[in-house]
Image (tube, rainbow, N blue to C red; front, side, top):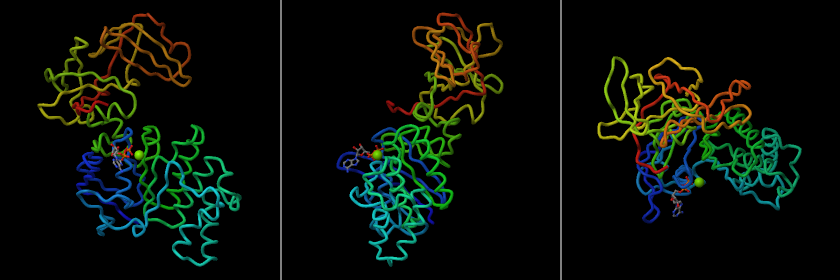
Length: 367
Ligand SMILES: Nc1ncnc2c1ncn2[C@@H]1O[C@H](COP(=O)(O)OP(=O)(O)O)[C@@H](O)[C@H]1O
Ligand SMILES: [Mg+2]
């Protein structure tokens, strides 16, 4: 088992900076996720942990061992890829045994280890099946077994579920988590899927264009994004540029030009991210905190608008309310039957609770 330290890592490919000034610590036994849009440097970072790439500058350490320029086969990391990278003409047994043969283990030991890991991934009845005759989900289990059988200190998974359909993906998420708990192994998991990241991870690092914006638990990342990029990338949000207006008791007031109105926000760390005086600011309002009512409501942040669209998705209902030409709020409510469905064109009151919004600095990314 290892703690992984990445210190001040930068990786250049010619003039492209794939990863910039990255500092991260991945704890022993942690399920740690790299999340971000395509091209933001997730795979490059994973490959620097595996040893397939060496950083241009900076250090990689496993516990107190400097691994920066150690060859992949000397790191005891396992890797699982999106496209499985299996040998299709070989059997399940041969695929899983491959890494053990390379390590020159004795036949009976190999047999025992392979049988054991195939039981763990629930593929023992397919041991002699050719890999090309397995379903996508089963092939991904073979890839997991092959990586786990060498008993790695760290398992690295690069978008391993992207090729599976939604139902299988769900099943494999639980499967991977079960294996992680069973083996007590550290996993570094790469995905661009925020639901996957939120539902699986102990901690998440959010990347954009080679820069890690935030590291935190799923609830920290969702409830306390450090800037507008993180707020937008994780979950849905209503995001408007605002400027600081004044303090009133234990609240701050921020003005939105587009709304031609102001928002009261509780002056707490949960509601106001750290920012510098020079930063441009935005308010992030999650759709599930937007309260709509056909009757007038009491509160500081009450606005009025017209329902422009109602989207029914089964478990929840999204209601879009137009305040003016520039501003439309999205409100999401659980489906509680017909009283949840407002009529398109109807006039409504919008209430935004002061303790459930967040002021964030704008990061300057275009995402
Ligand atoms: N081997 C390579 N040679 C040149 N550029 C690369 C190479 N690998 C990645 N890049 C570039 O580095 C950036 C980050 O890529 P990558 O780490 O693969 O992103 P992600 O996995 O988040 O989609 C991209 O701009 C990509 O084009
Ligand atoms: Mg990638």
